Length: 346
Length: 243
Image 1: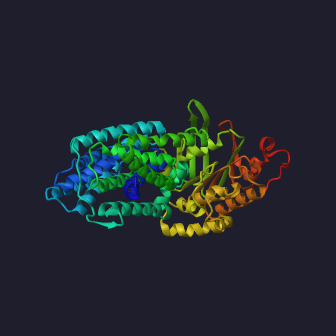
Image 2: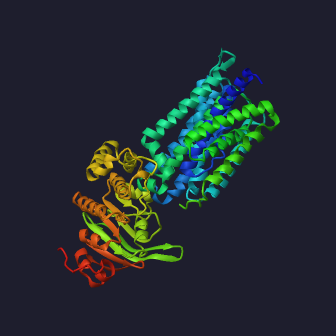
Image 3: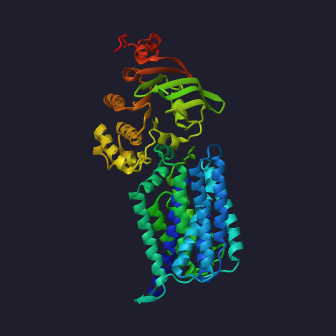
């Protein structure tokens, strides 16, 4: 191996690692706030990517219809729960957020899809569609289970992952798609060639991490999210609704997932089931961060990306094996370092 | 409509075990009411159930409204506050953030004013406002827990064992603040094992034993009661009451 190859691999690893970092952060966030290990994070990635690719090639993505369908179910859940104390404002709010909003987005998607909209419109629509799916997914699958154990939530999480993956096959077919680059063009610095797309990846990742940091550190809602993660009962006693925190967490996770997908799909071909593996690599990083530490997760994600790049060079058949084997020493170390903890009851 | 909080025929059970049986209680406007009793009498259980943390069979009204269908957050928004025994602070966040979050349901402009009020009430918290809540001493944590609850502008503050495990000088401070709260128009429902101190500042008192109220009356009368004196106040009690 010479230096040029090494630099190439490093660059490749860092680009992938940046994506894993975003996904890992979303996983940590969702777990800390809701105790859900978000397996369908990968579906947010594929949905984002393939919705974007479909729109860009002038096709109508099925996800827009799915958002409306899920919104109607979510609205029905809201109304059913509040059936004994229904009042106008509550009904109006639920119908607006769960039915009217996705209906408007669906109408926009239909009208735009036919005329091959510009990249910015495709991105905006894809993000909104996947964000809504994330929000309604929380309402339908996780909010009713909010008080149950981590294991029950994990089972629900696996279930939603399988369901969304199946729907992905239905919407996008078994063939892979590629999307247009967000930023075309490239330049070379020494031996390295930087494409506009990889620069977009770095830029957006850094912007998102800084944005999250500011959101958690400075805004009341960000602090409320942290508070829920630290002490659920304390947060409720302060008047912070667990469901509100859960909604914000899922909204952020789905936007992060979709954005990651949109950034990857110009670089590699994505299939309806590609998201799972990508999400799992974010998960490896999140586990290295102990599902609690954001900075550790981000660093671990870069490490995962770099290990992946190098193993695909040296032993491409074993690429995934090597990446997931990273978990074994980490889990071993963690289990030795931490005393056994019983699951919290609340 | 006179009572701010009224509990009638309340039962609270953990599975099949009834920890609170047929309890009735009233807290009026601008009043300190205390529930005294031994460890395990069901005092904490009762407060948790009033707050909505545990399911309660019976009727609870607050400010004239039935609380049955309201969850914890709604009760907080109505002006019911609880400082739980374990304080439940956001230990990895600093004092100021903890207080700020206590005012989550309050408009920003009002929250600013109440944070200053909390700092005058607890000057120690102002000194430590950038310190993480988990690194505070026990007394400071208790102050912070009370401060956070007060940030929500409660009409009734329920305090669960505020003096537990604290040095006597801090206990005195906390009881002084409770009386100041009353003066500023906040009613207090105080659960205490330190019956002597609690009865001194309370207007009305209930004595709880094994999940039931066995005695109730004016705090001064309860303090003078021989049985209470023997069980909860120790031998130093001399029977004089400050009416």
